[in-house]
Amino acid sequence: MKILVTPTSLQPGKNDKMLQKLKNFSEDLVFNETGRPLTEEELGEALADCDGYIAGLDFVTEKALENCSKLKVISRYGAGVDRVDLQAAKAKGIKVTNTPGVNAEAVGELAFGLILSAARKISYLDQQTRAGEWVRSSGMELSGKTIGIFGLGAIGKVVARCAKGFDMKVMAYDPFINEEYCRQNDIQAASMEEVLKAANVISLHLPLLDSTKHLINEQAFQMMKEGTIVINASRGGIIDEAAAYDALKSGKLGGLGLDAFEVEPPKASPLFEFPNVVVTPHTGAHTKEATDNMAQAAIDNLIAVLSGEECRFVVNR
Image 1 (spheres, rainbow, N blue to C red):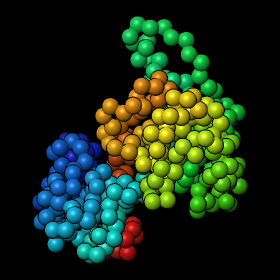
Image 2 (image 1 turned 90 degrees about the vertical axis):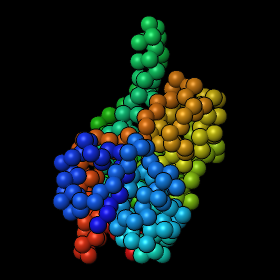
Image 3 (image 1 turned 60 degrees about the vertical axis):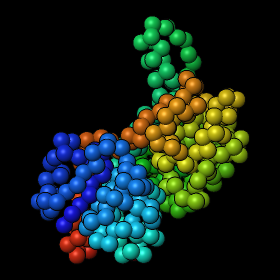
Image 4 (image 1 turned 135 degrees about the vertical axis):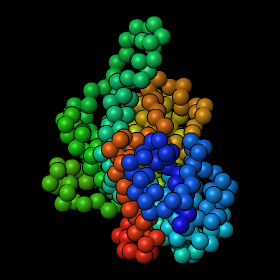
């Protein structure tokens, strides 16, 4: 069986221990040597004669799948499946699997790191100090402040736990919120509008859907308190970056932390001109522990489907 493996952190020389299990299953492995997600055209060509596919952050479109007559499974290396055309895959009899929860600790910790960095302008002050400057800059303490978490899934719960450690009040908005969990963990379940109006810090942990595209837009920024910090360690399209630019320019936003962008890589984003913006290259899940967990789960899912065994992480049944 021929298998395509595209995640940049699951390549020879990077995670050989986890790849050995895959090599034991199939000797015909093809890797992504570009160091970036594959384009639609590149992906379509690479998948043409593959039986299985471990997918990184490639956009798996209907066109990319149109000539994949042998493909039986797309095993996402991560929880998000918004970059996979699930209907197109299902129409061709291709199962799509994911690895929910395995990178929650890594992404949640990075999100809180972005919160700290934005609140105290850590990356900006580091740059200035290295350049020989000795800047005096006032930041914001987190203790006693309110954090609003959009999406109280596995990652959102990690952020909530971290926030409790800083003595923050935690509010959460989630269309499918577990109110019993909130009661047990002293989290205030609230509406989106209530969170936007009350929070000093907002951390986004939602999937990118039609309903969440540009959820944080001009109207949302207007509802926020002056000086609110917004963090996005989920998907870039959830924030309207043009509206975020205006909110930073006016001072409405006190800080912005991004691990995801509408266009990746973002190149010369106008957001980079602000000292209270901290950015990372969609690296939330890139810890040794998380990449091992994702690799193990993605490989197990792929092998299960290709072996005709039951896989409980199929998302397009």
